[in-house]
Image (cartoon, rainbow, N blue to C red; front, top):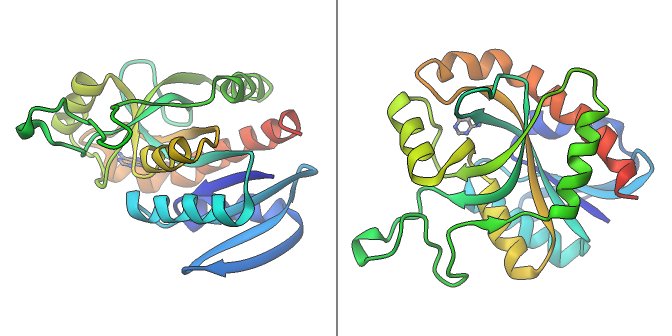
Length: 230
Ligand code: ADE
């Protein structure tokens, strides 16, 4: 069983639409759809936006469906040169950029309990993501740190801070908390997102304009990826 999590309905509807042998169940307000995608057993869910929603979804999915790995799919804001709208970014690790106990002497982003800043994604899974991206015509795939926080990043100042403090190549609002849940439960995971905006002063215009195009890219990649996970 492969777990697939997207934050918003638009990020999961193509997945649900092409799943077969579907069965639905709602737990704690989150609907989980179990079935097959490209012939591979999976469970897909819309978590809702933000770290708390995403953590609830990942933990519930793990306890109820025991997925052997979890993929967080959807869109992200791209950061840095060479990362363009519609490109794919796969996380080699995730951070929670709004976790801040620096006034107590911790480094920014330090997550107490797991006692680390960066949460590593599964390398074997990422090898397969890159292979799948290579099979999609004209798709550029970047790898790096994805920064998660409970905020939409839409200004040059915020963008620069995340790049400087965390070396992030993309930002979004769920991957870092799904990562924390997976890390604690020893479930391999990754975050694979298509770029919908550049997290800069134009992001509030680009995001609604390119959301659906980016979602489609993520889905195309997932379609190539699933058979590699069989
Ligand atoms: N998801 C897509 N674009 C984003 C941005 N700029 N900030 C946070 N999450 C996003």
